Image 1 (tube, helix red, strand yellow):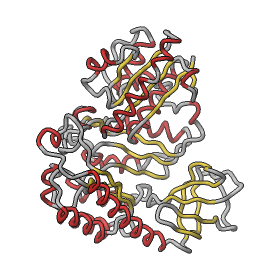
Image 2 (cartoon, rainbow, N blue to C red; image 1 turned 135 degrees about the vertical axis):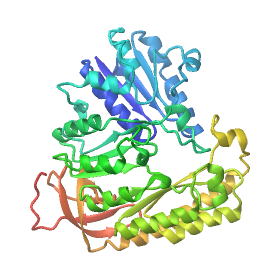
Image 3 (cartoon, rainbow, N blue to C red; image 1 turned 180 degrees about the vertical axis):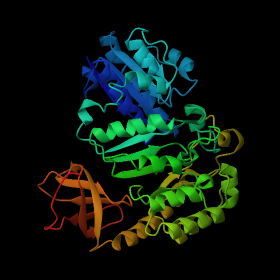
Image 4 (tube, helix red, strand yellow; image 1 turned 120 degrees about the vertical axis):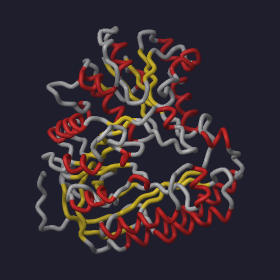
Length: 445
């Protein structure tokens, strides 16, 4: 029996698919990268933008001929296209789909494949516990011994509800995972050779806030820091409102927590931020960045920005441009606003910025950021940086620095999973190249 998984979207979906694969292998299935060979096909979908939803619908529709040819084929539609309450609407539209699974929950698929023998499964966590072998979560066979970095969800859903975002309506309310489950999973991953974990949440720094007297993200980091075998810890995505002093100090004082922070601003104008329901001003954001840089010297900061939000004027956009120019952040994930049915922005605001103008603003920020990052990365030339190597791509080994800079090295040695000093010999805005000092011995961690 074989399974095939198609994944679209964010790191949370990647993590979900990894866990679905492990669940299916626990039931005796083996992976195939060819859908036509599979007995079970899982489509893990994203709908953060309309184009992503259209792509997901197109992909699942393309499977109809396979189902007609092989009626025993099990098709599982999973993720944000289904959402927490969307299965009934999709069943009539997609009659050839056998199972509809909410995000992060393999339960419906496992129940279907076991012919209802596991009807007691109530949520994703219960499913995960049932499928753990010898109390350990196993990576899919194809990834065992090869996967160096793994994403570990710690908060499911979101309760913040920014006006542009569909995620709270698709993934449900915020739910923090128990500390014991998270740490147990990370210990298991470490035993399987994983060196780096990235903690995931729609708003990751709200971890524990949905639980009375619950643990904080900073407290969780301190516990995970003691897990033997894990060399690097990252987390994303943070919200400026919840990035507190305790979290800053945890990053500053824990050597295995990497000095790279994902901290979206979304816009640099206060009125636009209020319309987005972000809950802070551009000056609040500037002050937070200044504090982080003061307490964690040399850290890198990434942000997200949406251009062309309803009502955004040229003057308001230029305030965003100025914030990005002033702060000189290491990464800026840019997006043009698009209408998403079901969001507050779509119901209450008019998408009045022309597409051509959105693209012009997008290109302005893109050009600015390319210049800024190019200048930042030039400072690495000739310096020695620590790189954790993940895989070989087109004949070169790829790895990342503590600040999440992408580095490529040519070497005939097997560098997978190795943490080595690298001298940077070339630096561009999107990646760097380097060499391993000849006197440096290559060893496994």
